[in-house]
Length: 157
Image (cartoon, rainbow, N blue to C red; front, side, top):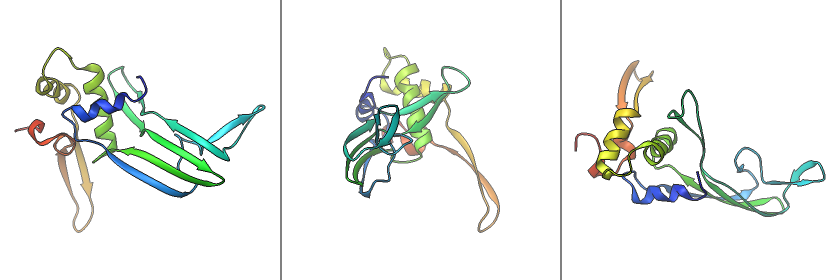
């Protein structure tokens, strides 16, 4: 996937992402490690500089089984301090990003957005069973598409 492709989500049936800012001591990885550079044959912490990572994902059991790994992140480090911009899901990040990846990469682009979302929900369902313990034990089944799609694309609308 090309850099910044995730911006297409803004013109899709999915709710827009949120922007989260972090300002403080270096604490946000890009994606797994703090911002760093290579000196000789070693990685050393970045003293001053810019780092970024694009949307991270993998496929697990098949080429259609998308798994979200990390959000797009942009970071500026200055002597132990960091300003980071994290492109964040409006709801459950796993359901949001993996469903959007399926929509973007595996649905038929000759069809309408509504038809593509229907294909996505049929072939890449996001029906989860959630177990609760308090105040009493119970379980509920939820369709995550209810939380990650714009209102006019939600199931049963």
